[in-house]
Image 1 (cartoon, rainbow, N blue to C red):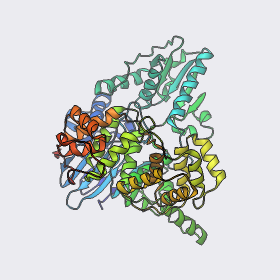
Image 2 (cartoon, rainbow, N blue to C red):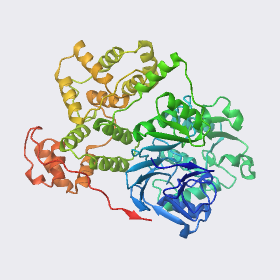
Image 3 (cartoon, helix red, strand yellow):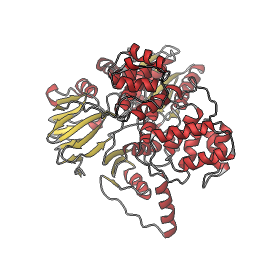
Image 4 (cartoon, helix red, strand yellow):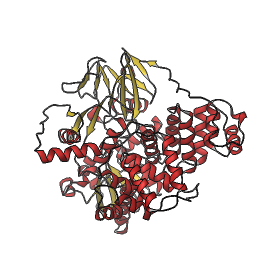
Length: 574
């Protein structure tokens, strides 16, 4: 594996690269433009947007910056570097590093989050042998409400303040949360004033190309009725805000989940908006990266590493000082069971599930299309391409008839036949989740399973067989056996296919555009072929091989073309 050292910072000696060091170094990767991650290094590798923010915020000289676009490989000294969106703040990046000689790989997350964002690029992950991850919220109790609930709590706070003739003041970092809150309020037509520090960072983001941000209106000490003020946390003690006599303050922070946080921060309310991954988000990162070794940094690094070891993973705090666990016999049996629950088979269905999760976590249609183009490029097998496109084009509640599908009652009966299932626990999760499909995944996560790899063709055959069979206890038993041999993430995908709702939110037009872009064919020609074939999956295969003119009515079993490996992009040098 790639060697990692810690000496007041993370250092990769073979690549001669420091990762987010806080003191000046010859060559460093800077994940984002927050002050605690920035120093005046001689050479700074970062994303294009972060480079623009470093120039604006810290006056970093252009000669020190080595900006790189997301997903574009860069080669130096026998290593290939690739920056991936981290979703933390605008421009934040992870770095994926591959040693070209033996393909050993490493992913450093920097600060990241897995949930959707209005102003930050949607998070992506790549498989890696070593994962270095931040663990700010690395304890099991840190599970944030859904984004919709967080948005609702902010809007409720604002409207309650308006009702009492108070000025609502939202406190969050000038770069990141300030723009996130601004975008939310702008969506709902609520006028906003911004503290000068937050306004300056918002203008820098707009100039750097962050879309959909309104021009900030700077706060001058006076707030007309019906306006919200967005300010950094330290501003509550400033002379500028003292003129606001009737104000109500709320801190935007993941630490809102801590008891007594409102009194510690001396605010009227704590709202759980965070730009970090919560505990489930950290586990999701691990599932999607599938590392052999995990190093944790920041926050609850030792605690999270210890938890991962109980799950059978090679996980250690990068700072050292881990305490090895010596469990008693009963604990060892329990930990062994947990280890089996979270083992994930590497297979085509897992990759498809990861794509669906990415697509569902963002509301941006352009981001959804970019993810789909990237995913389609990974499908070397024509049958997988046809199956994936067919699912995406039809497995959506607005585009499919649910004949022979899975209803909520059958799903509940099926889940309760699995080993370890308890009806009272299902009721509890179902009431909390308020969505039977999401509740099914959460329920499956608590049950033991023995995940097996499965390809898309076998999954499609199972779905066809299930839909063709009449409702019966035998059919539910077959589904239970299938779910027991899948990781919960893949189990959710199968359930969604059976209910006719993948939840990706990708319109048919966007799917067609992604196929045309990934196959370098004409959009209208693709649509004509899809109409003639009656099957967009079939047309996607023809498009891949440049044979759209051969489109004709045919059965799904008639498949043109042959397997074709995805092309490798050109490599740059920095």
